[in-house]
Length: 229
Image 1: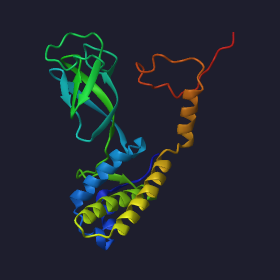
Image 2: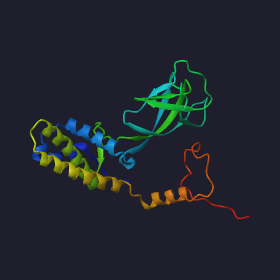
Image 3: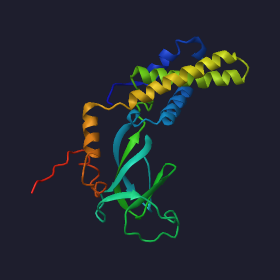
């Protein structure tokens, strides 16, 4: 789903219209927003980006907006092809052995590879931010309603724990969030006509395409054509 994005500051201005929520600092709203996006985890909430990284001593630091990997490929002179996720138990061992196959694993904010030096390109899901580093969120009523309900629920929980809120108010916020987040997930699971066409082509293939990973899945959504002999 492709849609307009708005700054978290614009969303905060709307949130502050509620008197009970005016005491929440912007930093807390940003933290709640990132947590909400990670909890819901709907891929269409994130940007798809590509970044070149230089591997030195088997590792490189990931981009600051990194959320989760999609695929990694080599762009160096000494290696060609795509990396796969590592299954080697000793992949991170200091007693590293030369491994012919290109593999990687991610821990924290570092990517570790099976080769000592290389230039790689990583395709990944990114948390969208504006030019000032503030998160961008979809300008979508289902999303903003669910996010507001999540922040309200979290804030009301803290207020209740401190003895400043009636239990009925908290329960109402929890119920509102349960309905809102369900509607949000449903909204972001819908496919456009073009996405549905690619999905249909993938699952209607008669011949299994065993080498799509190496080809970076570039043709996985294309229609299968069979020659009649």
